[in-house]
Length: 554
View 1 (cartoon, rainbow, N blue to C red):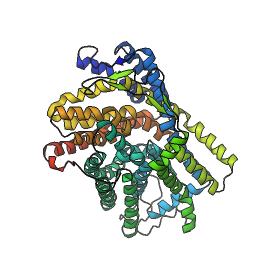
View 2: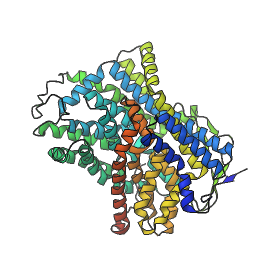
View 3: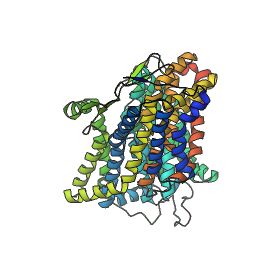
């Protein structure tokens, strides 16, 4: 028997909204306020979500329990597996000594920590986001920065800030594909509109990133490099999203910005190379830092080979033709027992009663994490490791990441419980009461979705339809508001507990999640406001710039 969601069980939208927010308040209150370990925070938040769904919103316990289990299963295969495999690749690189050569090659480009931050966290991170997404950029780039000599806190927090502008096209464009599917709007228009919002932040974020680490004067010293990084990435992001496709936006942007910056730094270096307190000073102009060793070009190419393999394999894994063949051969699709089509969404979230599907595709072979794992095995074999050594390294990685896997899984259990119980819709409906300011606050609706679920893809699945319905009611452009959901969502990526857990695990800072959350929270709010203002300008000042009827390659 189907159960229909209710969006105001207490007959007072303010009280209903506050109660719906309890799981999030518990999660972040324990994490940031009481500094409880993240896996316990996730467990407590998920338990609160189930309790609120059953006792206040009237959801049958069987449905609430299956929603939670569905989320856990989704989190393990779709997200935790990616992060685990990406960190495994990194551990192989470290074990074989190739990571030291990678570090030296970057340090020889520039000894300046500000420029290394831009190269690794922003440029390289954007590339990894485009290829794998779902936490892999934070894990890999964060570990990379620690290897370069960055403080663990900076490696974690700054990578969270950097992993924003590229997120809307992460994992071969998955968030945009999902947004088009749930909203019923043309994917080309949505991708193009997001590509007219986020390139503006693509110039701001590199500046913001450096300023978060150093003072104003030190930031302005490297302004030329910041403009090259942000400008090359943003121009590529705009061009690719508007005129090519929605799949390779980040991969193209990351490669172009990395290449442009490396070339630029061959001709320009800041007058002084900024280092952390206590570090040996370096002369930037002549690359006279005595720390990095000289390696031959073949050595450097071989050292970077694991990440080149990762990029190629994950790219091939994401191609529809290849993924389709693997899915048809190996992917069973199961209706989740008791839950599939047993929950019905109602107005005003949807225009008519709509059963919520709950189908679990066990795509163990075509999953992005499997592609990352295959890339790690290939890299290890090519670097001379045997099966026993590869197994030993994987066991080490699994032990190191076990608590992060638990946390990620329970975070997704929480997110799926809020989705099927309607708690997410109650929170979202509160934003729709902002009237003519909805373009600004609707951006924060996307932010909320990512903070809740840890994924721009999931946020678009949750709120894409609601954004279109609200936009139509308020006589706003639905393409703009659905795009705002995804563009605003990327700024919530740095505060979602799942990403923070990945960052602390990769940088050996488990236990410092609350400190990092408090640090990045205001950066997230401020950058979300920047996106909100951009959306407001498109809504009321430049409405003609919203694309309609574009045709690009899919």
